Length: 152
Image 1 (tube, rainbow, N blue to C red):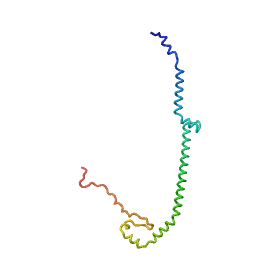
Image 2: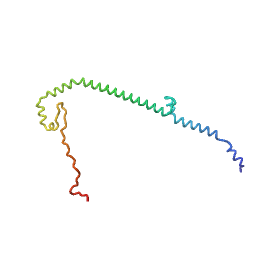
Image 3: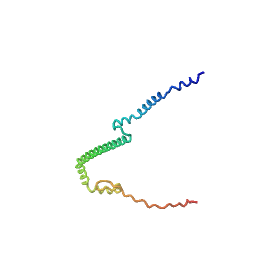
Image 4: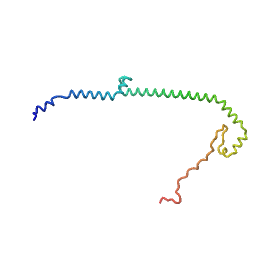
């Protein structure tokens, strides 16, 4: 059997210092491991609050997006200019084709007008086909019950 004084000898040794050291090491590892991106941002923007850093990142993202849109607009404008230049170069050939089409005999136009397909879809002078006119729907009628239906 142990004496009561012997039971108290283990309690008298304090583990406070050992627990404090372990706690500091654990907290440093946890905070260091989860805050790596914050430390990287501090390296880039300086030691500031996360809200300030996020505002700076947002500003940079907006500027980058504006630059990207500007580059895309310039690229599109250059492409359209190139396309317009190609159309301008091909315009004399198109004009010659239009003149040849316009010089076709009037009898051909009269024969085409007599066919039912062209009568239903008249062609404009520039050769585009216009859809036939559509009759509007009759006005709506109020709902009426039929003779075989009753509300009783």
